[in-house]
Each structure stands twice: as C-alpha cells, then as structure tokens.
Image 1 (cartoon, one colour):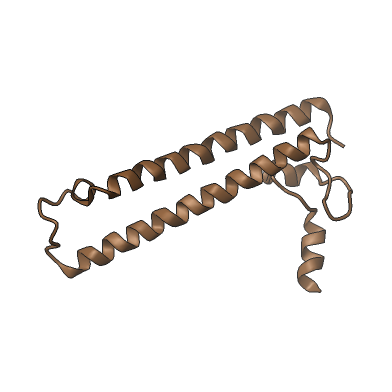
Image 2: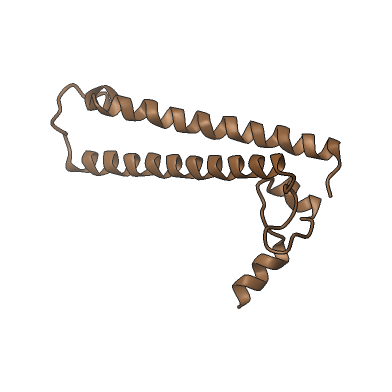
Length: 125
C-alpha cells in the first residue's frame, strides 16, 4: 500500500498529466476553429488547390490531428479514472486481484489498473 507521501507524489503527477491532456485537446479545438477558414490554415490565397496532392496532404494532417485529439481524450479519461480511484482509496491496487501494483509500475504508468502479470496472463489465455 502507498504511504501518504507516495500518494501525493502520484496525485501531483496525475494532475500534471491531466493538464497536459486538456491543453492538447484545447489546441486541437483551436485548430478545428481555424478549419472554418481553410485558407487561413493553409496560407493559400485561393480556395482552389494548386496541386491535387495538396488536398491529400490536408486530409492526412486533419486525420493526424484527430488521432492526437483522441489519444489526449483517452489519456484524460484514464487520468480522471485514476484520480477517482485515489479518492475512493483504491489507487495502487489491481482492479482484477485487489493486490498492490508495484510502485515501479506506477512510476512508469501512473494510470495503471492492473499488475503486469495479470495482463500477461490475460493475453496468454
């Protein structure tokens, strides 16, 4: 079980991760707002592309940004879930077995919900 100092350390780390995810999502939203004025985003004077490849590049960039947004959203959900477990006194305990998650795992992945062995056993079955 984590002591109070360790618990606070992980809470601070989770709150930092939450701020990062929220900032990434906000950045994406700002980019989406610019999407309404595509010429502002691309720097083009005309709305007609000079080259068909430009449209493909723009589409790829939008898809990439959407992926980053989804990753940030998932990270935010995981962090909020970890903070909720902390409030309920379940943080640092495996959701599968109820056993303590090794501190090394929590340091590497503060949102961890399971022990590594449990994940590996699940994959092997």
